[in-house]
Amino acid sequence: MKIRIEMQKLTNKEEEIMIILWRLKKAFVKEIMAEMEGDKPHYNTLSTIVRNLEEKKYVAYEVFGNTHRYYPLVSLEDYRKRFVNSKLVEYFDNSYKSMISFFAKEEKISIDELKEIINLIEKRK
Image 1 (cartoon, rainbow, N blue to C red):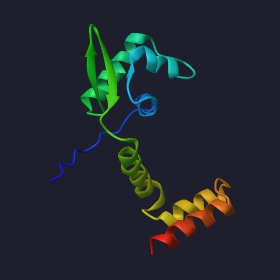
Image 2 (cartoon, rainbow, N blue to C red):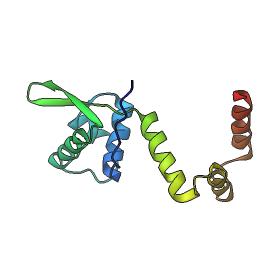
Image 3 (cartoon, rainbow, N blue to C red):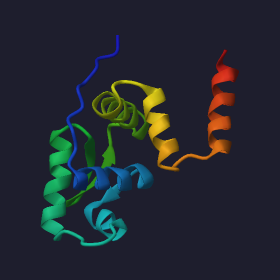
Image 4 (cartoon, one colour):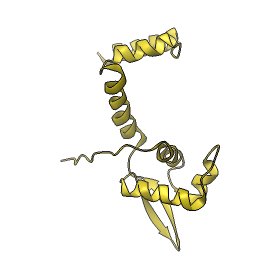
């Protein structure tokens, strides 16, 4: 029996850090900082944010002397499913058609990409 843990919503900065950790698989705070773009938080601030992610059960760590190497507990795929689905409900009335129509109107999806999606759906049948 699989126990389902409710994922808490992440702040933008927490999400940025998770994206880095998903890419690196494991990282020390200094390695996370090196991967960040734009305005980088102070080392202690970043360390606090990572500890918040630990409290939210998104990351765990391995101890190396006086430092910790962090790794994700939640997969990118699980996070994506949870939060894309919540945005689908919030912004598109739980309608994939509305969501795809939105991207088509905004010219964010091409005809070729839509054909690929149709092919994927047809292959599932």
